[in-house]
Image 1 (cartoon, helix red, strand yellow):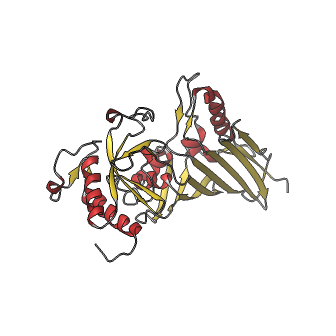
Image 2 (cartoon, helix red, strand yellow; image 1 turned 180 degrees about the horizontal axis):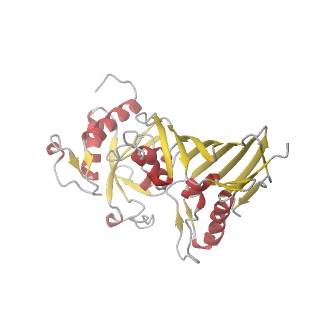
Image 3 (cartoon, one colour; image 1 turned 90 degrees about the vertical axis):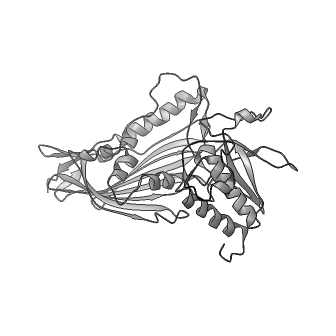
Amino acid sequence: MPDVNTTDEKIKICFNYVKNKFNWNGLYKRIPERKLNQLFNENEASSAEINLFLTRLLREYGVDAKPAFASTRDNGWVNPNYPFIAQFNTTVCYVENKGAEYVLHAGIKNQYYKRNPVNLIGSKIFPVDMVNPRLINVPEKKPSSQTIIINSEIVDGQLINTVNLKLNGYFSLTARNAYADYDNSFIDYYFEVDNADFEVSGFKAFNYEDLGKSFIASFNCKPLNAVVQLDSLLILEPSAMFKMLTENPLTSQNRNFPVEFNYSFKRAFRFSIVVPKGYELVEMPENQRYIMSDNTAAVDAVYNYSNGVLQMIFVLQSANLMYQADMYHELKKLFKNWEDMNNVSVALKKSNI
């Protein structure tokens, strides 16, 4: 162990060591199948084995770490009035230090030690503590944000985009998991697109290994058929390359159970389109806003046209992880508004000058 002074530094070093030592085999286990001293020469282990190994290592360096039973969200919620062992499907490592709580699963390769595992957010864990047995909530800690800036111009009838991403929280975790060796598969995966739909070049990523910082990336792309010419008009569909913008994920007529999000979020898309010389905007779209009755979620569309540049900003945000079935139709309407806002077409016409 390097010479470190704080508990937080010890947690960081031990967590990263264990995370890099083991490959998680994908199995959620409450109890290890092997003794911990048998794991020193192993590379693959279950969740219980990895996190108990981490707990033991932290204790060796004076950190009061405890194993904790946990239930992943897809396993189901723990009943706080009757929490029996069968409700839990995995074991994590728990540390409380000067009011700060750490819920650690060292099997997730791009997991940041200060961020709780995404599949435990909103659930409860049960630390093995004979003095103070209790259920502990697993909070989100910080909301996640995604900002994507698209600067566009039209060259020879084709839309040329420069795309910049800044991702925080669990958005950055998703991006890091998708990213590998500057490969365009990251774009296919993250934007849910078919790479045949546009040409990509100049992909760059920053802060990939520094998990405490925003994941930043940029690339150039030429969406095919994004500009349609009709006589003196140019018709643009700026959002067409992003299925995440143009399709409503809620398609059922009715729903009898809650809608869950992995985490609370704010997603912002900022388009800046340079209108080519000799053209002008036919009609400025109207600003729009839709907010749910409980004020927990909203969508916004803001437009501005100045000095030959059209700016369009689309924002979708939700503060809740879960919406009950009686809110389904309102939530579906929220995403329908989001879909309609982003399916806007921009018409440019040749100037009379």
